[in-house]
Structures are given as C-alpha cells and as structure tokens.
Amino acid sequence: MSGEVVVEAENCGSVLFLGLPDDVLELISARLRPRDLCALGLCCRGLHAAVAASEKAWLAQCLRLGPPPHLLRRWRRGVRSYGALCRFLAAVAPLLGIWVHQNPELGNVVCVVWGFLSVVGVRVIPQELGHLGLDAGPLLWAPVFEILADGNGSPSRFFLHGRDCGEDCLHPGSVRSIDSSCNVLLLEADSRPQDSAFPPRPLHLPPARSFSSVSGSKDPGLARKYSRSRTTVASRSSVAPPPPSSSPSFSRLPFSDRRRLLELVAARIRLKVPRDLAAAPLFERSSFCDDANLLANRRLELIEMLKLNGGWIDRMAAELALSLTEHRNAASSNAVDHRTRTVTDKRRAFSSVAGYLKQFMGRSTSPNVPCSISRNGNPVGGGKNKHAQLHEFLRSGDVIGLSLRATHMRVTTYRAWPNMHDSRFALYKLPSQAPMACQEHAGLWGGTFGWPPGQPSEGKSGKALFFLLLSYEEVDGHPLLIATKILEGTHYVLHPNGSAMFIVKMDETTSEPFPWETEGESLQVEVKASHSGEGIANGYGFRYPGSKPGSLFVLQNGLLAFVWKESQAVLTLQRVDLQELLKKGERVPVLPPIANFVYLTKSYSNVFTGFPINSDN
Image 1 (tube, rainbow, N blue to C red):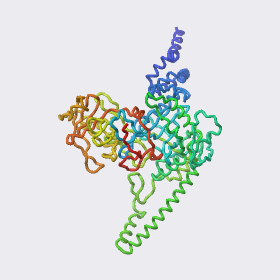
Image 2 (image 1 turned 90 degrees about the horizontal axis):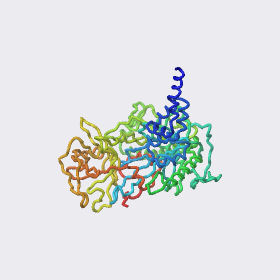
Image 3 (image 1 turned 90 degrees about the vertical axis):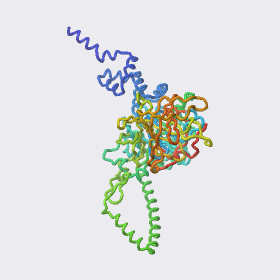
Image 4 (image 1 turned 135 degrees about the horizontal axis):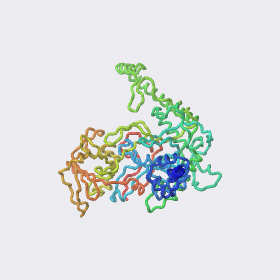
C-alpha cells in the first residue's frame, strides 16, 4: 500500500506539469503575469529549467505586454531569448502613454510608443488642420528620446534627440531606473566611478565630422567614421554600477548648476547623424510601408555608435569647462557691476534721497536676515544653503554622462492636470482612464472649433487642432465629465495649458436643442444624448479663466460637440488613436537637446517649429 502512495506522489505536482506539451504551457502562461511565471520557476529545479527553456511560454508573455504581434519574431533576433525580450517589454511598458509639461502654454505633449525593440518618445507639435481634417492630414511630430534593449533584454541604451547648427544630433546616455508605477520622467546628469570591467579609454576624435552607415561593416577603421564634437570622452558601457549612496544626488544641485551641467554634457557627447540615418523611421509607419528592414538596420547602427562612443566625459574635463564658464560669467558680472556703480554714483550726486534708500536697502539684505525659499526651491537672501555643491557631485565619480530616470513621486492634480515643479527637467505622466460602462467617453479626443467639423472658416486656410483628455470625477454626488486641454494649435495661446475646456454634469439632461440639423450639405444630425455643463470663457486674466453655460451633445457618428449657449460657438471632438496618427504623421526638426526634452521657459506661442504650422495636404 505504501508503494502505491509513493508512485502517486511521483506522478503529481511538478512531474505532471513538466510532462505537459509546450502548447499547453503557452496557454497557461498567457493567463499569468511575468512575475507569476518567474515564481513558478522558483518552485524546483525542474520547473526552473522548463520555464527558462520554454520559448512559447515567454512568447505568450510578450504578446500580453502589447507590442505589435507581427514584429515580435523580428525583435527576437536582437535578444538572447523570448525571456530576455519579455524582460525588456515589462521594464519599459510603464513608460507607454502621454507625458506633458506646463510650458509652453500651447501644449507640450510627448507620446511614448513602441519602436523597433525599443520605445520612442515623440512630441506632438501644435498645429492647424487643413480641409482634409484629422483623419487625412498628417500629424506633425518630432522625436525626443528613445530607449533600446541590449542582448539580455535590459533597457540600458538611451538616446536623447537634439539639433545643433542646423544638424540632427544624438546624445547617448544610460537609463538609471524605471519604476513600475512611474509618473515623473527625469533627465539628469550621472556621475559614475570607473567600471573595472570597462575602463575608460580617452578617444581623441576630430571635431565636426559626421559618421556614415556602419550596418554589417567589417572595416577595422570603423571608429574613424564616427565623431564627437570638441571633446575628450571616456568610452565605456552604458550600463554602469550605481553611484555610492553617500554621494550627493543630481536633484539636490541648484537649478543653475543642473542646467549648466546638462548643457555641457549634452554638447560634449553629441553625435552628428548623417542624413540617411536621420531620415530612417523610428517606428513602424502605415501598413503600406515595409519598414522592418529599415528599423532593424537603424537599430544596429545606433548600437555600433554606442559601442564606439559610450556617452561619458571625463570628470576633470567637465570641471575645467565649468570653471572656465564661471570665470567668464564672473568677468561679465564684474563689468556690469562697474557700469552700474558708475551710474549710481552720478545719480547719488543729484539726489540725497536715493542715497538714503540705497543704504536702507543694503541693510535689509544683511546676513542676519532669515533665509526664505523661492517657488523653485532656491534660497533667497542670507542663510545656510540647503543645496548640494557642484564640485561634490562631480567628484563622486570619474565620468559624467546623461541619464534618464522614471520614478514615482507624490504629485497632486487639479481636474486631472498634475501640479508641476517649475525647475525640474521632467515630464509628467497623464493618468488616463480607460473607457468602461458609465464612463464611455474617457480617453483622448481631438477636434476643432466650428461646424461642420473639419471645414475651415471663410478666409482661413485651416483650423487649430485641440487635444483634450476626457476623464470622470464625482463631486458632491454628481458624476462630472472633465475635458482637460493638453494641446492647442493656435498661433498664440487662448487658454492655459491643462485648463478644463468644459465640465459636464452627466446626470443632468440639457433642454437646449442642437443648433444644426445637418452636417455638411445633406447628412442629417442625430443626437444620441445631451448633458448640461459649463465651458471655458474669459475670466480674471489669462491664468484664471472663467466659465459660461453650455451643453454637450453626443452625436450618432461617435462625435462629441460642446456648444456655448450665449455665443453658439461649438467645439467638435472625435476619439483619436494617437499612435496610429503618428504612424501617418510627418516628422519635423527638433530643438536643442535639453530644451527638446523639456521646455522650461514660459512661452505663449509655438516654440517647437520655425515654419508655418498649417498642414493642409
């Protein structure tokens, strides 16, 4: 009897599981999360070996993470296994979505989409739509950054896009970390110690030379085809050990030091891109274009660039460059002070009152006055400086480079718009609600003012494109639909970025009729539902808009139309798939690298293009 019990124990549990075909394991894996599959492999050695060796099980995991299924087999060729591919997809999936910043007020929308064994961040440019509308007219966009996978599936390869002297450039860096619940994306400078496995070797490369295509090249003189500009760099792997915990973090530096250091590093590590590589696609375009080979070759060239030029500069070179900059700034400041003192002395001779006021103001800035903190976190007046010192940050490592860090921070929101820090080089992720029962309108919508939708007004070549994020909130027991403006295609901004274009009470039906009976010449308009609400209007200055009564109409063809009651102005919206629009879009030149990542200067016009924004094709 005991022998039968032993036999039954041997034929149950992991032994039976290991006897399942790969196709069955694939079906089981499709219903598990990646960490659940990893936990299964920790049960015993047999399961660990089976899970690690099952390509189909990890392929099912890759399919669950959302990239284009038809590209997964091509992506598999660039990594060791489907398990490594799944590691990359799971690591970068939290970056997918819409990221924004307050400046400029027209909108700063960066959409992170799948590339080719990569994720790509692209900025949607504020623009006008021609007579063909949103479906047919190309959406203008510009690249911001991209993260590539290495052979082990680690998201370690990072490139920041920028433009210098009229030429496209790439700025390689490292990915510091990606939090699974990240809501803030930070561009930072990273100070690292020397890696014993990859000791930095100075490369003295000729300035202002471009590189050519290197895909599949066996030329031993390949390094000469790449160039940095005006720098001595340290060539090393982009994956480096984290800095010691005792070293000061980049975020603790004063804003001016952070900006100077980022601009210095970006200028020293830049790589000029030849026109053929700059014209290559960053992600799959429409189904009519077979971009797989172009994308694969472009990725190989980027990896070769990173091997030859790792994206790090020597600490001593950075200290020297920063000290020279400080010396020039100090000399310029002294000259200004000398001229100011001369003018002040002349005025003092004519007015004793001005002299008395100058002495009074001088006493008010004495060291005994307590220090106050400005909005951006910098101390004002006297007192102890709470910031880290730049020289301490630099000397915490041997090489300096760019890094990208996706982290989770406590960020408050107002009507679905995050309250942003005005001195961080950061993008903020918009929380997006998925459409569901009783919240069927949630998500991203795009549209224009006027009726019929898409047709320009008389005497105008196009209409300003608006992107609104629709979300639901419950206030005092009433379900509200809030339309937050994230992009405005006017030439000069009308309303603040992140303001609510309209707020609708979904439990209140409006008594107002829809003003138009037809769409265009003959199509009859059928109103499915209508709700009362309030739309944005002029208020107390630009920063504090007001509101006026209006109504939201749900039309038969999936359109939403909000009509202001008094003026009869109408904003017509349609649901948009931003990634599909980008595939059919048109790429435009970018800004200098740091401003291209985040534009911190307050602006009320379109700073992202130097040409007309009308895309009437």
